[in-house]
Length: 75
Image: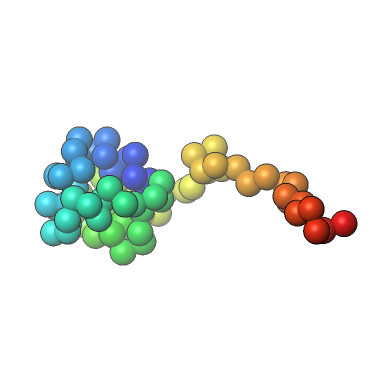
């Protein structure tokens, strides 16, 4: 579940925090993909409107670079 989707549903981070019974700061610290257990809680709270089984597409997550950075000591 993506943080953007959760914020779109609840409109405010404070409302997300209240729904989960956690601090506003905890919500602010989430990365793009929210913690699994919180996603499961939100799925239940929203009666499946926020779905934990949605497919994560590569377009929503920053693509990995195929080339590895070469350090000056590697040669």
